[in-house]
Length: 446
Image (cartoon, rainbow, N blue to C red; front, top):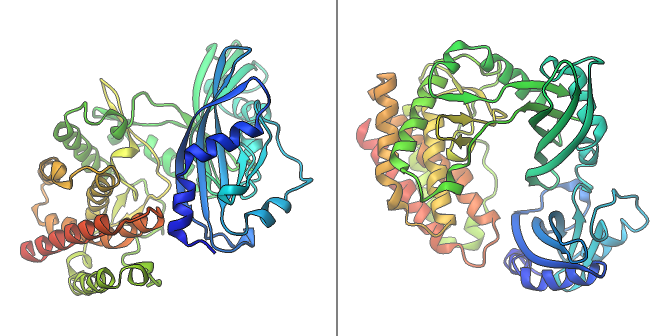
């Protein structure tokens, strides 16, 4: 049976996959490009399969006769049991897609692909991008001309973020006919396998109602409607592009300072759900790090003990409304303003957590993109300095450094392992070094 590293190599063999996809398409349709979008280890027991990976691909297709292109998303299961998994769906009913079959078995790669929006672990996804879903939104949103005054003439859907089996975010371009609304609207809709977006909608509604969050040069998306039947959250679209899509063609230090000002303003609000509290150092789970690299596993365990020993740095702090998943990719950057998105993880806890999460995410992305972490040392220091200046809380620094180390030793290091890259050892070693540096700073500044 192939291990995670072998499966990772198969998942990244997009050249082979491109050839296999071409054989599955009708004449006159060509596969121009195939990109691996997401990859993670399989941990969903509902599939009743063995070890494997969940992957997604963005495939650029070209219809030669009509001289047009389209991007088709595919989610898939990759593993030794792919043949049996494929057979379990033979005869099933699928949503038709513009090009090719909705279900594809790539034997040589041990891969089963489902053309978006077909997803066995997210069965309500197709209903989320239907005309009925759009019409339900229009009927319930006054700004869109709710009631009988507005009618959906046409709409187009562009998937922005798709995590097979978990959730999806799409942009909708909707044309309306009616006296109560403009002719065209751009909306964002998110769905998840659970109903957690109901809580997110309530959080966004509280935040939108807080004048403090509209006083500066940053905005949040206006929440419009939560469709409980489809687990679908509708919100206004924000202008701008993501940080990493603009990098390196932007002033990183300047942008990070602006994001720190957003954090300071956000932490002055009280938008987080009542009773939802941040949990630090979650329950111990068996880490594959020690099994894969025993020496790095021992070093990791030693650093975790040091981290636990200095837990008092964050043990007695006043609870603050946290974003919960605060990092550069949660922002949309525009010439006139920046917009903050994704409040799914909002909770109460130590304000330093948001800043530590921000820094650890930057360092993770640097390693994933083969960038030297030192490139972000000065911008991150400017980020910390700006937050301290805005909040007048110089004593927060040890807590920030502790949270950076905690994030690097937890979610971030496991992220590198879950990517199933061929040889993540060097990057993991660098991340351990960064965690040790920040932990030492936390100890020295306390």
